[in-house]
Image 1 (cartoon, one colour):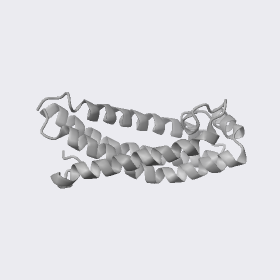
Image 2 (cartoon, helix red, strand yellow):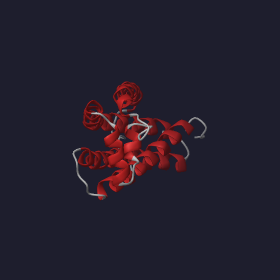
Image 3 (cartoon, one colour):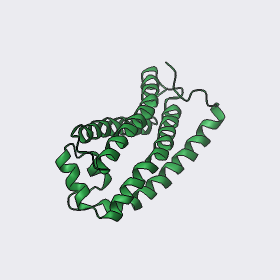
Amino acid sequence: MKHPLEFVPQNLRKPFFYFFFALTLVIFGVFRLLDAPLQTSTAPKGIVSFELAHTLDASQAMINSWDSNARLFAAFGLGFDYLFMFVYALALSLGLLLAGYQKANWYSAFTIWLGWGAFAAAFFDMVENYALWRILIGSLDPSFPQTAWLCATVKFTLLIAGVLTALAGKAVRK
């Protein structure tokens, strides 16, 4: 199997990584601002609490703890997240491509899998956001919070595994 970004010329991989990594940090900073109104005693971690609510009652309690302004921030954030998905998937996948280049076969293979995992995480993020949007606009279907929780859990697992693997690249021998 080949890495999903293996087609990127070798001399452009690092500049593209730095560009998408910087853009990831900028967008993450914007999300921190958007998330502030969503942090309540019911949703102490803002949108992340909403993503991991798991039940309709917990999701509804969080929405009810938000004023109309916070609900607008949540809706905007869910839409804006689609740009973030594209950017973070590229940054992480490029980071893994760089980390696995000319390394031990097992590590290189693992970075390839997780390079695909970065895009899988973005896909799970899309499904999660759809479920959260449906809850936010008033759906009382209990499958939506469960879907959001499952997708968020898989997304976070793939992203954390990818980041840790990319960071470990310096320690792995060729």
